[in-house]
Image (cartoon, rainbow, N blue to C red; front, side, top):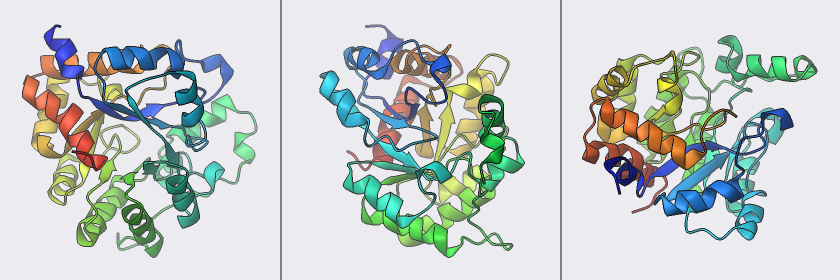
Amino acid sequence: MTLYDELLVGAIDLHCHIDLEFSGNELKREPEALWLPKAEAMGVRGVVLKSHWWPTVNVVPYILASVKTGVSLWSSVVLNLSAGGPSPCVIEACAELGGKVVFLPTWSARNDILRKGFSHRLQSIYKHFGKVENPGYVFTNDKGQLLPEGREIIECCKAYNLALGTGHVSWQESLAFAETARDMGFKQLFINHPLTGFIGAPIDALQRAAELGAFVETCWNQLAPGRMDSPELVQKLRAIGLKQVVASTDYFRPYSPNPPELMRMFLGMLYEGGLSKEEVKQVACTNPARVMGLE
């Protein structure tokens, strides 16, 4: 086993998009039933399956019925319009159906719409998407304080022992969630890909979020060709504080390697960028387990 193989052993990917995500034309090269045995052989501990459109709680049981695997496969729901929006009932249903992670809205978030995130991309995929009454959910008032709807989401996730990802809301909203989560004793909040262009969180805000106990996610996308170099990313992660950083793939592109191979590549790039083996293990294994409420 090489060093790069060792980096992957025990890893948990908190952010892996399921097939299908957008269209049959964007089918990944390997469906879950094919790459899960590879993930097990490579020592991956667990994967959270996510969809921008539908809850994955009703898909995971069928995947597990078709393939035997020692990899923990967790389902989730994104609180977009298509899944019912940011409703406590949606969160409750996720928990009762075996889900483990809730994500705040992505393409239904006001920040995503204003900053031309996935809502903009969907307009190029679906000719009728522009007719959708996309609500543009927002969770803070004009003073930057978390609205009661946001507090209720945290309360529900805490009550059902669910992790909460911030989706595509603004970094200011994520910080408000972090402050309220700290006050409520909720320790399973992770801020999704805040260094991406359509969120653009400043480092000092992420330092504050980490101080409040929130986890800050870094994804392979940040090291995709033409984007950030790995030493630059590692420098930013160190500034945030590795104790509260989690590494995920955010796998969804058809050209990407399958999830375990993509995670192996990402962790190797973080190592080449300056993280030690122990530090890679912290952001890939230890910290994601803390997000999921595991030992």
